[in-house]
Length: 61
Image (cartoon, rainbow, N blue to C red; front, side, top):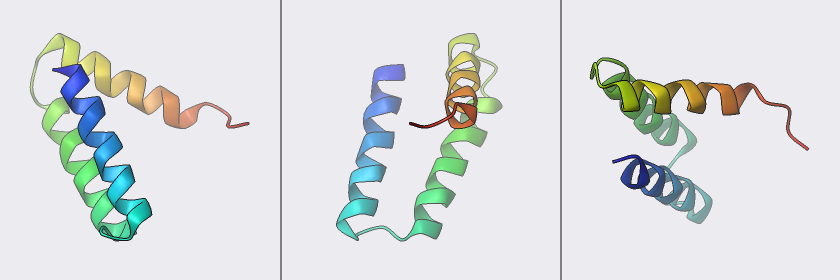
C-alpha cells in the first residue's frame, strides 16, 4: 500500500509541475490523503504519515 501512496503523491507533484493541478488543489489532495491515513487506525499507514511529517520538517539542501 505504501508503494501506491508514494506513486500517487509523485503523480500529484507531476501534475502540479505540468500545470494541470493548482497549488491549492495539490495541497487539498495531499491533505485528504494525510487525513484519511491518519484516521485509518492501520499501524503501517500511521507510520507513513509520521515519516511524511518528518520529511517535511527536515532541512532541505
